Image 1 (cartoon, rainbow, N blue to C red):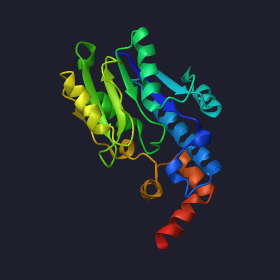
Image 2: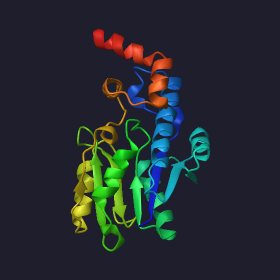
Image 3: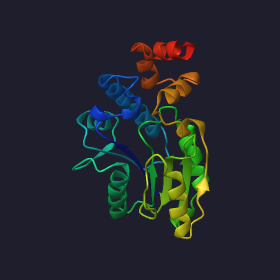
Image 4: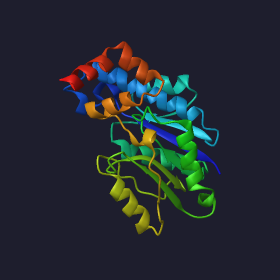
Length: 226
C-alpha cells in the first residue's frame, strides 16, 4: 500500500498567534520552523511511508522540505489547513496513492514509533475498502493525525474543534473511524500550557534545543513559579 504523508505549513511569519502574549513574533516564527523540522525528521524515519509532501507558500518551510528530501507542493494563497490537505489529497489521488497520512507541523513530540502505530492500527484494509484512522489532540477537540484510504475519502475539517466533525464525516460515509490516542502526536503546541506540557516530557530535537537556547524554557519555569 502506498501512503503519502502530508505536512501543511502556513506562513511562519504569522505563526502561533495564541502564543503572542508570551513569545515575540520572531520567537514564534523560529519555534514554528523548529517544530516543523522535527516533524519532518520523524516522518523521514518511517519506512512505511512512500512519499512526504510539504504544502506551503512559506520560503523558509520550503527550504526545510528541500533539506529533508520532501516534495514541495506550493500553495497559491493561505487558504487554511483543510484546503492545503485537500490540495495534497487531490495530487496523491492523481498519482495513484492508496492512502494519505496528515500530520501537523506543531507536534514536535511525535515519534516514528507513534506513526508506525497509526499505520499498524489502520492496517491494509485501505487497499481494498475505505478506511479512516484518527489521532485526537490531547483535549479531544482537535485532530492531530489523519490516515485515510483512499486519499480523498474524507472531507477535512481542521481547526480547534475538528475531531468530532472528522468522526461524523467518516461515519456519514459508512466508515467506522479507528481512534488512536497517542501522547506525542496528541500534543500540539498552541499555548504556553502546551509548551509547559512539552517541557515536562522533553523530546530531543530542534524544538527542545531552541526552547533552551532562546531562554524560553527558563521563562516557562519562572511563570510556573509565579
